[in-house]
Image 1 (cartoon, rainbow, N blue to C red):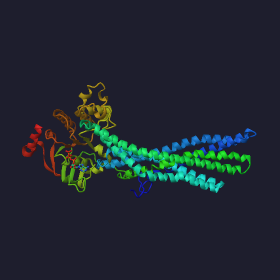
Image 2: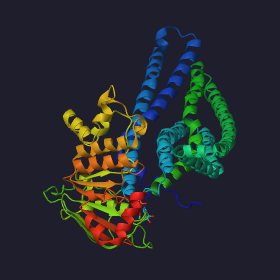
Image 3: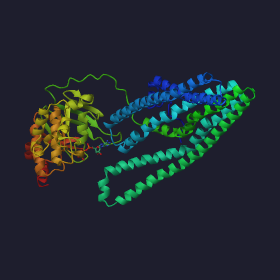
Image 4: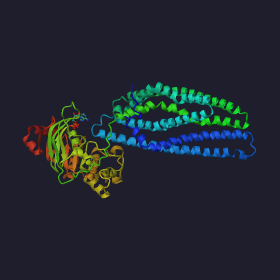
Length: 584
Ligand SMILES: Nc1ncnc2c1ncn2[C@@H]1O[C@H](COP(=O)(O)OP(=O)(O)OP(=O)(O)O)[C@@H](O)[C@H]1O
């Protein structure tokens, strides 16, 4: 079990900083919250007095003129203050949660380059949907009302103390039960339950994303019903916990109502005695006023224990957030590198790389040079490190030893210039659910219509969109479903052409395509990318004539290299592999 609370402590780097950042608005919101209840209470007080006084038939209207004006004033002030307070508090909370979302995004981005696998999509969805919403509620439903209630509590006890010390003490105890004893008991009783429920909900989120991503496989395997049953059971579990907690809430709410009833009776008896004892009729008018003034305060006190019960949830939220990678504030003004010159050669210089410390080196003293405007094909068994090589080139991974350079600049320094320098054509480019034109435009938002059309033509899309009534404005449907794999790759290629980066990574874009489409696509790709420096990851030897150099990766080193022609004539192993590939 936890020993130290994180929420709003110094170690809380997620909620506390924003709490401090907007503290001026926060103070205003709290003050307005207090004023709202004060106006509500004063409204009831003046109306109570007015009713009592009017019932005693005043000689003329002027005798009750002041309470009439006050009743009107407080009647207008209460909703106005409430409105402004809501506006302020929501504005405050939305500002803060938007900052937290941004921080979450930055944190994931920091991590994304290194390893996406540590944080499942479901976890992130859970954090975005549940946790940040909890933080939103933390302020709107818990912290603000609790602080306002405590201010009111102190004000009431002091105000009553002026009239009678025993009454002030009694109110101190009775309201104290509602504001302190009940919430604490509730936190103690429900703590474990709330945690359990939240953990179960996170399991549900993970199951859901997994299920949505793999829905086809559940269907094909004939285990759809089994999956549904499992999911329903997990959901049932969450509901069961929910039921127990609701039962507790109902009982607690009953107890609160009884205490409120008791407070009203105590106030009534005391006011009756206090003002009745004076023997003067005019003082009797204050009795109803005193008792009625308490009623609006019930709205301030009642929700506190309900919301404090959720404190463990907020604590858990902050804990989960604090486990995310911290965001180094990268405010440093990163000077753009003067990297774009004639020379866009790539060099891997004595590179050692592995993902984890105790892992075998994936690249060991690895050296490779790709001259400007040349194509190097990287081949090797699955898992040998081809994709790793491309990630090192993008600067997403940093070598343990050695350097990865483009035009003598470290690729890890590229930062936001990365997309300006390196384009990627991979196995499954994402085609967004918009028109072909917009999908291509993604490569360069500033491109003109003519440039987009030229890129589409160069990528060989003309024959595709010409047949369509809407041409380039045809919607591609979700994930590009409307088009074949080869056509989707051509859209991605057009996007890259528009991006016009001098270096291109081609990571098996032809995988899953039939040999004829593969051949046609490769022809287009290498035709339009002929001036670029290209790192081409492939499994196929057929087509490697497009490469100026072929490199075989094995055990972290280059085991074979040369042009297709050279290798075919001098290397029997290559020849053998080439023959095998021909018959595949
Ligand atoms: N994030 C990671 N953490 C730990 N190990 C990883 C990670 N990513 C890849 N690896 C391991 O590094 C090795 C090289 O992976 P890489 O993806 O570069 O291979 P590849 O040659 O591109 O394979 P394929 O041809 O199947 O795509 C593999 O053994 C893989 O399991």
